[in-house]
Image 1 (cartoon, rainbow, N blue to C red):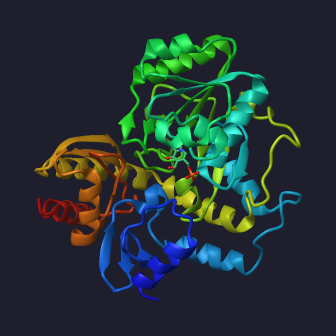
Image 2: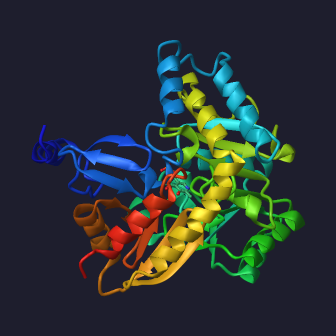
Length: 386
Ligand code: PLP
């Protein structure tokens, strides 16, 4: 089928929630993608931080091939080894409590909100400006963006939004607060690194009131910032966290991970999901988690992130570079408009990035990217016509 034929099908049959770029990808390997005309692209978005291990990582392919021919689904009424092993590995790699597996980031945050409300019935959830936690109703209610929320009111009650100011956050948390929910680095709204002071204020407020400190590590986790979990580079440890995106090595999965205090808060019948933790995806996630836990890979992410940041800072249209590890955002000359620039990077230079706002472009390459690929991407972005 030609691209025009695909676009015709979309126009007639697909709910128009996405503004797609006019490219059909047919193959991926490592940090590269190929379109239906055989053109090669450098993927510096990784499916929005999903392909941290790269496209079609041989170990993921082999594991999925083997598992798909053996067992794909039995429901959570029975045991399967991949789900139990993945839960153990996730808990051991982070907060040491227990794990609820699900299918996406939004679902993981729904589980986190339910966990906090179960711990403190009726309690409020405090979130900060510019947060993004997903599109389902609970997660959307925690995502204070007018354009995303307003058309779908009324939202879930009991959410309080505060500015990214330590005193404001501390003042909003009291004995009726169930949780403070934060992304250590806000991804969807433009790679905003939350300050240590804000995170410490959240930790102190939760300790003072018994509220649950929840970190949304859906984008910052799985090695993206140079440690397996983003919080490892912070002075603050959450009581529970969510993961998704890169956890499945390219397949859909999400997880809520608790610390010991909250390990048994959710009880039988409190929550569930048909596909959650199915053996096919859990087996892929086990491999992805192992690859992303490799200390050598994580050390490289830090070095490569600095190389990419330094390269981007030399581009004439870049005004700011921010982020951590390989989770980077650049602000560009407002006259050029980030969405237009990202589109031209794709179509003219064959570098895949995306705009998160009018002036910000996000870069999140696979963690297995090489120095040469970073230099090549920077050179291609530098060659963009003004
Ligand atoms: N939380 C964060 C920090 C995210 O970046 C995203 C997705 O971009 C989500 C939640 C929602 O995840 P999903 O799209 O898998 O529902």
